[in-house]
Length: 450
Image (cartoon, rainbow, N blue to C red; front, side, top):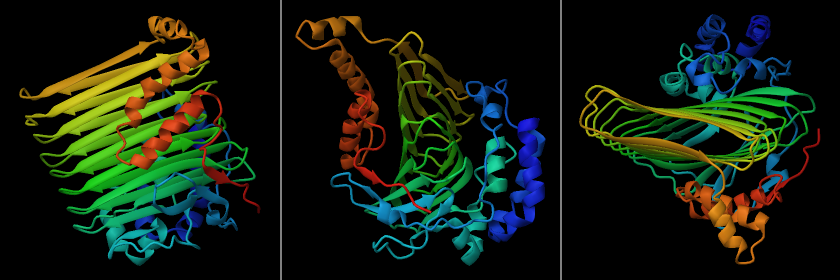
């Protein structure tokens, strides 16, 4: 229990500091989260949902935390620009785990829409945050969620009122910046009321050559006839550990597209839990991973069909080179009475070298009889016949490998609804395979000075 003890001691010694720097709705669930974390401890690899990633080892190092919310005197709008052609976004920043409030994008949001600091909105409108915060993300069920809930002091909240459609994509850049090894605990709350629509692009970047540990919990409520597009792109470095839990609840006839792209990282563990609460809802969960060196990427999903006539589709693809490791575990649960369910789950993987490792476990659990469900996974190497065919036509072996890898991963990128982002990602992935990309090309990042 040594890994847990340092966080238990940390909370007990700094409980009042944390409370003083956060708002009442966040503090209201903090002690309960602490009790849940202390009871559970970090999950071991004996637990089904964590058997592919050693969580205890990830949290053993002694990281610093900015519990007193010491300000970082920097304007990220001056040092960061994303050059994705034709992608017009409303750009916001989260520096470490604090929403940047000094400067806001000069964009007129529709009336009633909130895009702001979670801590600030919790202080100004506590009834709104209390209605949703930590309701989907149950601390009793997951130790990482409990740890994040007991330590998170700020983050992002997006609230879109009934019938409002946000045309411009909301882009949130999560920047990790520190002169010492640092742990951050980021929180995101998204609420789309009935008939609302919004698109989000979350980009994760590291600014400094330090060890970072980032936990993130996203709660998204998608009401009847609402539509949520949530795209997450990770472009960090090999010293970064990212543990992200996404919880989504869908009501009747809602639509969700959730796409996770990992192009550069150290160790990444993504969890996505989605619950259908209303009939006629649809979701598409997609992910693509390009990994080499000793990178590790673990995607774990759970889709809970609680009501009839819902549709879910999953597609995750990995290309693993060198000694990298990938894992995918996806569970689809079709409960009693969830008739007319349609579900498809696919995981396809290429191990470029004999040293690369992929663990895959698609699962179906069905308790209804009138359903249409399928799942499958493949793990293989590049097609020798295709390589031979291209080499016979004068294409070098390395170029032939790149073309096959690029074509393989493109199916996931093509699922994205944002055309400019989709086109740019095609280019970024090609550069990544060529070894020419060390971070998101087109993003100008300068070191933030103290």
